[in-house]
Image 1 (cartoon, rainbow, N blue to C red):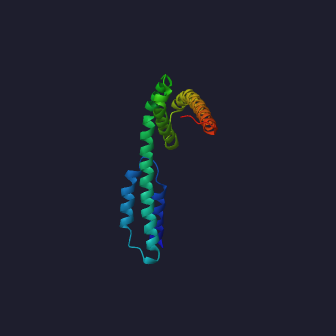
Image 2: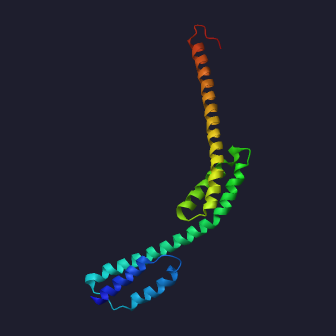
Image 3: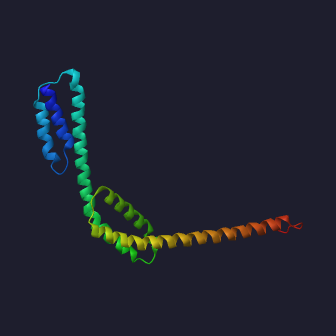
Length: 169
């Protein structure tokens, strides 16, 4: 029972690991696990699986933390790029780049803690770009509606000619 309690304690320690020290703490915990006496089949399999699952989860948490930190380091550059886009005259030419940067930013703020000053700067630039996006969509919609009306007029003219008794080619 004591051996089982020791293994449960090691599992709980691994499950609780967070922060930058995960890579430093895992090897000693693995060594401690391996140094414990063999487990009986009655409870050994479940605890071994719990331990392995806890190890993998701790490693994934640490990898996500490192990736989030790397993303957060890119935040100033992304904000600067987005702010630069607000000054571009031809919105259609920067639209794809804006969407890409916005997607990158959304992932950043979802996965990492970003400086509130950068968030405010991004939000300000976003308002300007979203306004231009709305104008772009309205212009495109008007163009499509004009094109539709033109095509409907052509179809109407063709139907009128086709219905005429004396069809001239």
